[in-house]
Image (cartoon, rainbow, N blue to C red; front, top):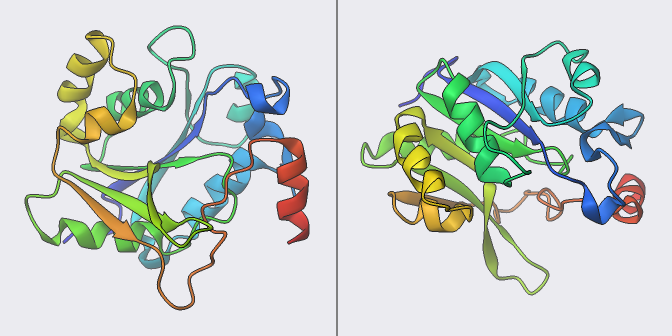
Length: 207
């Protein structure tokens, strides 16, 4: 069983924002609050008080992110290498046994995310717990950027990325990964809706 303060929360805000026209996605406002700050607040509000520290992975406008009051770490891999670069940066800086990753562009992720993912670790063999959410067709789809990871997997990730690996699923497939469904009665069907464009962001604000 994972106890309170054994999890560090990491907000992934290191992307290029190419589908938003190259803007820094984490600094775009959602109901008047920058998306990355909104994600930090939802991490702090997680049920059960499971999270200890929070940090942000960002690659530009670092001073703006530092103003949120948590440590900010750029990728240790070059050239915007994707979410796995953020995973690795976070694992390198993490001082707790587990790290919870969330992207900056999904402002309605569940407030019981940490608790439900942590339950997967009641099986001692679990190495990664990953959220799965229903698509429009009703099929569950893995949400790999919403993962609770044992920090001891850092060495494995370093080896994978040094060999040129960049796809999250190819790395998580190497480990005992448990999918945790978020399709129960009362679950927000749009909890994992990510805003890739400014139009999607504004539409989600109105929904």
